[in-house]
Length: 334
Image (cartoon, rainbow, N blue to C red):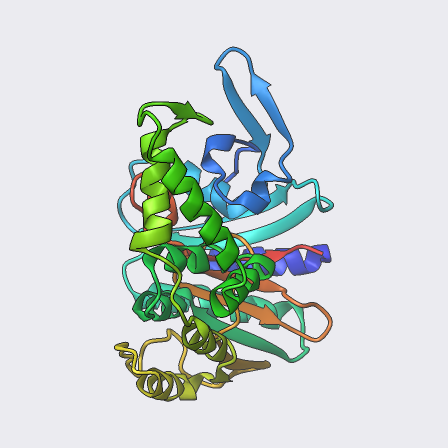
């Protein structure tokens, strides 16, 4: 990105109350839970502290960790610029803007509005703002008639399309039913062992408990086709954002799902904003496990994603940090 565009973005954020902060270049690896990020870390071990660190692989994650260590409990708007480092790509420079201790939907709208205005400043080309909420898919899966362990498997893999559809295929076709039969035979053999015997750092008692859940308490449903069909049909839904509440309500009613959507469910409700077309797209899902609610991206024909962001209210507590509601976005500096 040309320096003049960078200065334009900084000027917009500064005029809207975002305070720039300097991010630490390293992060303790215990805070990195995303499996895909873990594979591409530049790590080193500090012998004095006996801790493992990595060059920061993601700026938003680094920003959240730094803010969590402050004692600020009021709504705070911050921005940052810098580089992230991953082995699978060249140095990735970006600038981001986030609202911490966010309280309501107006904060989500502010982040999206700033994203749209940044897009307008850096290009006159038409683009598309795609909006989704990951809570929709989670609500659907949790109401399906499938064992809880399968619900967990489906939701855990939504950030990895390849494995996500492999899980759906197994649920749909029962293709690994033979493995369940093998587990059943092993279970019957292991019942004769001492329950305190260790096998692979786990006691026989723990292994039997897992087998009981897998084979008897929560076996695969005899017909997972219906559940998989509902999930796949949901992931095909897209429409102008104004029509999204009606489209979703009709989908939930048709599939007998007890989910209600209000007309003001999404923070943006107009189909167009300047040079941007705005749509709901149920397949708009991030590729990293950061966001847990609202997710959006701004795309044009030349670049697949120019700006992306969303809400990550669950991230801080999952990392063992104090609870912080947060929403933000970032743009890659090309």
